[in-house]
Amino acid sequence: MTGFLGTRAGVFSDLLLVSLLVLVPAFTTGYFLARRHKGAWHRLAMLISYSFVLIFVIIYIIDNLVEGFPPFRGDRFSNYNIIYLIIGLTHSLLAMAALIMGGRQIYLGNKFSSSKSNWTMRPEDRIVHARFGVKTLIVFASTTITGILLYFWVFVAGTVK
Image (cartoon, rainbow, N blue to C red; front, side, top):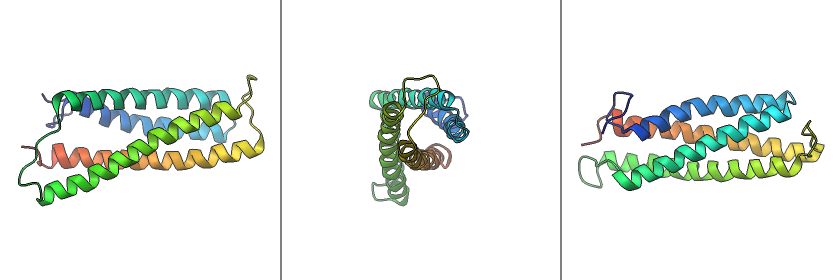
């Protein structure tokens, strides 16, 4: 089964790639909304973006469990497989970290925010939330970069049988 981007990737791999390319700007927009003290809009942007990431990751994992991972050329110690393992392991670890960090950010944001409509935070809580948010954004961007590398290595560079 091939996807809609014209590579050997499946539909869900293509969807995940497109979602990553759309969600990085969405998370970045959420960051800038926070910098402009638009708390309610920041919260909404981040909740929607994180929810989409979670949905796409769950769909992608289910797809890989059902359809399996693509087979590679050569033996298991070939250069293709070694590079795939390095990029794949890095991507998997970053993706898990990004999901956990994003969930923690949502928790911290809701914990620190008041129930008022202006979503104010105490200054010390705002600093903790902002610093961890920047780290989370960096990890998510790194996950996106390794995901793109993995996609091109597997489905474009010709390492799939």
